Image (cartoon, one colour):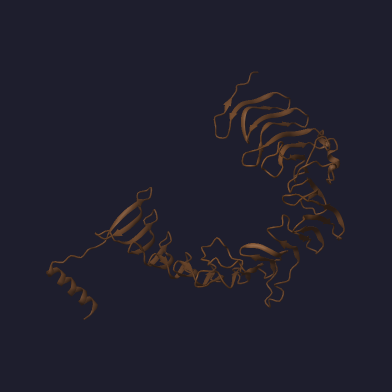
Length: 466
């Protein structure tokens, strides 16, 4: 008997026997703001859920999940806002199972994934919009990542090779018995030349690392030169070392900077080099034995923007990895422009910002009396005009450590015109403007007077007389 005849016969038999066929009915659980249904379920009279649907606000179905025994079970489908298929997959007793496929809007496959008992298994693959393979990932039967993962650029050139440096944020299932195996990552540019290499444990960078200058030539069809490039930086990464030892290079291979560090002593030396590999500046740090973490004293420097031999920052490190104490001398490359200002006040950090004409100074110190915070905090910050503009102070402000341990503006903050006339006087309490705030024009005339009460609170503006 054919299927249609069997169905018709069964329906006729049910009719004469007086039986009824129960049908699931749709119940709308939520609607979009425009009134179109958003979430609905199909339910039998006994309360059994047949399926759940989600809808876009224009009435197009977004996805459909069949149910059995109150949990997702069966074929899952998701559609785009245009009604094209976006994803297909399968649930088995509430868990992702089997093959799942993701599609681009042009209906081409974007990714193929496999699941078992709700965790990834097998070989996953992804594709670029042009159909070129984009990635491959591998998982064992327990959902643990395994093997070498790879990524490709959309021109087919290998972009990344990953051995054991997996993303721990993924929902992997681990037995908890073994530590992460050491691994590595290699990354390549679109011309196949290597741009980065580092060793790892889990997803943490640990061990030797190298970065290379990126090139933009034609890919090497033979692949022989893909692992050859001009080194930009190399060093050793270790989460237990405060300052990782490393060396940086110019594009021509000459040295820029070298940092020497030790696991027990911490940072020991920083050297800067000119284009001929001659040392142009050196910082030596003296390790101090303490009952707590290893601390050191010394001076550190920062180069000017777009220069590896000029220095626009200097700071003292006294018994801490943070700036503290005072700088006895100034060795900035542009210090002669600020002869009237340098040395007037105690300073722990001094710098010139790129694109700015001012000299900035900060004074850092430990809490007095001592607190539970082990590091010094910013206390006072100032800035100065260059001698060519009069050499006067441009700003002065005070800071206080807040309960969260951070330094925040606290007290009177003032700014001046190059002539020395006060520009404004502001009052801060724990980082927020509170109290009387005044602003003046370049002649010293009061232009604004307001009373503030903190962020997002009412401001009182005061009328000024003639």
